[in-house]
Image (cartoon, rainbow, N blue to C red; front, side, top):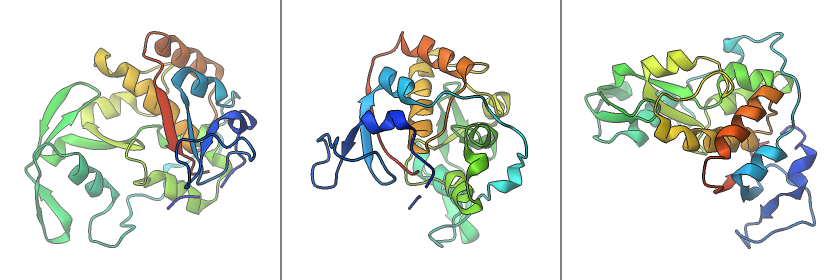
Length: 225
């Protein structure tokens, strides 16, 4: 459902799973879109390309969203709300959602009704641009902005925390819920790996600092680029 930029050289050393052997290493070919890579969190951070960010030319409109990719009447925002609801909302014509209950992981808060929620791009659109998406085609940026193929890419959170986060990376913003920070760093690393995005030096230091206090869990993700 997704697709292409050059995979960072460090990723060629990752364990690459194949359709025939989902957990087997395949070191005989470089990691490529569609491959699944698996490696421990700290090695995944180390494998990300480190380079300076570039904000020049960024406009939010360059990432088309929210679309209705499967044409079922519900756009990406509503698809995430429906999939993450603790208590399912009522759905009426035009995929209008009312009622329902969600848990906002960033601040460990229960939200009643969809109006108090934002759908956060786990790695914000501006951060993705800075980290390599400025080189992508418009179609690839659309794919990124509506990535439902990996449920870690988008998350329903309280509007308050999403707007507090804005376009910041982990060097300048972490979730208020301390219990979620290991998951946050793991997911951030996963999304950057999935899309072949780079990290800058302060971002890398922040990821490594938090990850050092977290279980060195394996990250497993299908590469989109």
